[in-house]
Amino acid sequence: MKDKTLITLACVSVLFIIGLIILSNLPTVGGSFGYGMPRPAKSDNDDRVVVTNAPPQIVYRIDDHRFLTLENYIACDKSGQIYYHDTLLGIKTRIDTVNRDHRKDDGTVLKNYYVGDEQIQLKDIENGIMAYKGMLLHDATNGALAFPYVNNTWRGCDNNRGCYQGAMVSIDKGKTFYDRTYEKSSNYPHDGTVFTVGNNAFFRGDEYDYGVKIIPFIYGKGFTHNVTENRRVKFDKETLKDRKYDIRLHCDSAIKPTKIRFVKFKKVPEDE
Image (tube, rainbow, N blue to C red; front, side, top):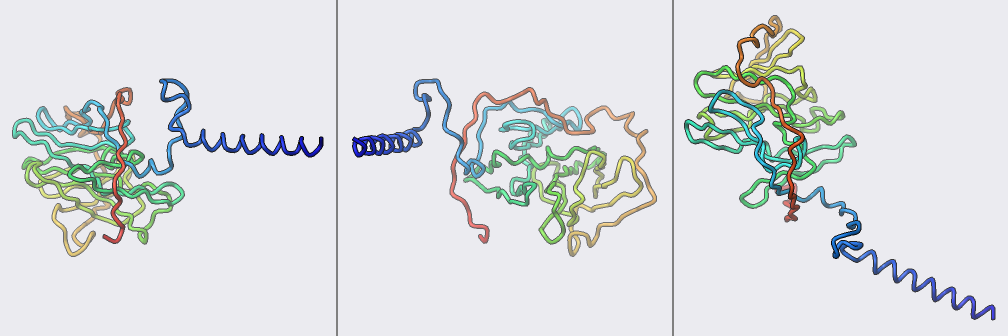
């Protein structure tokens, strides 16, 4: 009798384990019938790109015919691409820094990849330009443009880990943009940073402190070779009174996509 009981318990245990294995391989628990909880997302979702039907948002306006839009985003602070528009010249140019990698607080790197003809950001990486929270003032009269981005906010970032700061610059009225890196630093732009764009350079200052860096659009021998600094000047807030258009990027967080699609892609080795 005792042996029969042990055999019965063993059979029940085996059947229970088999049942768990079968359930773990189902695509959903009730999901096929329109109800129930889906399976947990795979960890490699961080390595998928996102395609959404989110409506374009104007997130920065220079004047009545020049502005930036955020498109294909999950939220204001998740994924998405930035486009520059000039309705008078018929220009629409993508300018976000899609090659920007993201480093988590623990130092783990999430690589950003190119995906065919479309350069779509990973779902958990904030757009570099939207991550800039400081002031942005366009005073150029020759059509020059510069849009700063935040490369990395990892607190352990330093010069030896490839941390750098820069802006996407155009000297052909927005037809093309290039990355103007100007320093290696963990001192990333913050909400008190003030970027002012002139005809031949952009200026990085601070809303509260003295000092401004002058960064010519054209590179010197290195990142900082032709970058100069004036420590005796301070930003004059009175100049903001006469500005009619945006002085900061903005985004309506209430606007969300109704459809989000994740696309798996082939990774490119880091040494390529």
